[in-house]
Amino acid sequence: MKLSLALLALCNHHLSLAFVRSVKTLYPCTRSFSTSFVTNMSSSSTSSIESNLESVRSRVQSACEASGRSLDEVYLVAVSKTKPLNLLKEAYDNNQRIFGENYVQELISKAQDMPNDVEWHFIGTLQSNKASSLVKSVVPKASSLTIETVTSTKLANKLNNAMQDFEDENLEIFVQVNTSREESKGGVAPEDVLTLCQHISNSCPKLHLKGLMTIGAIGDLKCFDTLVKCRDEVAPALDRTDLFLSMGMSGDFEEAIARGATHVRVGSTIFGAREYPVKD
Ligand SMILES: *Cc1c(COP(=O)(O)O)cnc(C)c1O
Image (cartoon, rainbow, N blue to C red; front, side, top):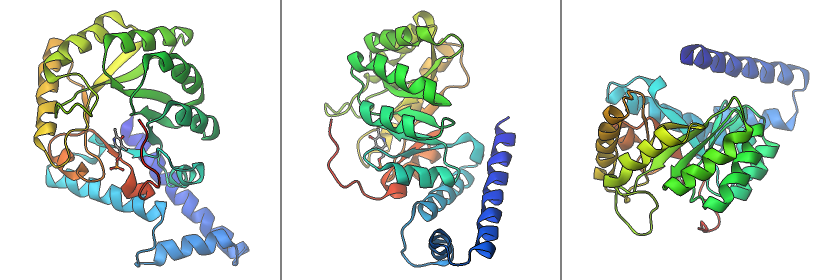
């Protein structure tokens, strides 16, 4: 299944390239073509979503090869918070389908405007009182919605309730772990992860526990090892062998892949530095 999707994505890519080429033949002076020509051929520092994505993908591939992992084990979440829609569309046109967002209103609005085969990941702090509007607005507009930042039974219950309107769908969930135990970071303490995962698994039938997520302290790769340990505790207790690990950002995604990440959340390396400070 995964393989055929990958092949399909590849075919789409080639089709769209062929399309661009044929457009060029018909309209040799179109501006959009000359732009893509420059980015395709240029080895200068020209920054574009297309070349940034290409470079991140090839770094993901090299990191997989270096640790003997298969490329299809690792998903790239393109973190587009604070970035305008046209940049997301550019990534979409380059076959990116998984996007990460941090703010409820921003995600709701982008999900309205992007094609509905996007897989959205919410990766910001989620207040329980916004859980319902997030779910009810985004689920109907998306291929799927994943909340990576579930940190309490209260939030899990709210999400589970909000999903009651959607008969045939489940909400994808990661439990966020505060592996660095920093006050500034969200997440449950490593010793509390199992209890929350058991609650989701036993008492929230509309939620599907997909795995564990962490941010970690900058430069402290032991945080990734802590997340792996949490997974190794939870998986046998829930009789699961398929729990994912979301860890690694622009500065450390290759190290995270070496340590077992299945989802890397990369923002600024794809979309450029964020221009205004991140609100909370
Ligand atoms: C912003 C953000 C990212 C992406 O960070 P970059 O350093 O820009 O790649 C990843 N994860 C979370 C939780 C974030 O808030």
